[in-house]
Length: 221
Ligand SMILES: C[S@@+](CC[C@H](N)C(=O)[O-])C[C@H]1O[C@@H](n2cnc3c(N)ncnc32)[C@H](O)[C@@H]1O
Image 1 (cartoon, protein in one colour):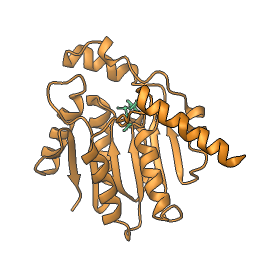
Image 2: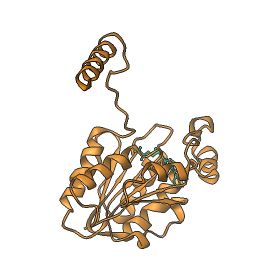
Image 3: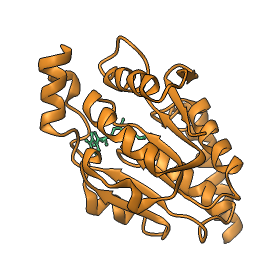
């Protein structure tokens, strides 16, 4: 009986693959392959250094899920926490107001991520005990309480939250640690992150380094 069911399933798969587009592979991540690869390479580089991993701005958790799988596969789940910081209800009103009034962005373009829900998000990650969801405006989080941090991914798009978070995150970062900042690309709706990244590099006297098309790198000596 099992063999008949298996054969029928295979037949159904063959039909779906050959005659519909449902089985066509899609790229589901919001960030580039080189960013995902760099995050993993950095976690591996620092595997013997005590410290946690932080993703700030997680949306529905695609990158979080990818990182969680790596941490689990490499059996690092007892040694570190993966903190996932987000409002879980989109941008803050004041951050959006700043983009519109001071940076010339359109309100409509920044209308995103309102689908999210903290309780649903946590339920989706229930099997990963080392993933800790933190519901907050990232600008007011004390990152020292989640430290030491060895790898951080900051992906909140806009100027103010990126600008306010970077110094606090950098302070909680271990020596040798790294912060990757998404949307470091001029001329987009989300180029507030670009401006904040460039300003912070100047503040700490570090030469900007962008990998791929839009990922700013900050290394703590
Ligand atoms: C581009 S999405 C993150 C995508 C995610 N990193 C990924 O790779 O799939 C931006 C997220 O930043 C969050 N966000 C924006 N401003 C924030 C703030 N001030 N504090 C916390 N989260 C914020 C939004 O709620 C949204 O979920």
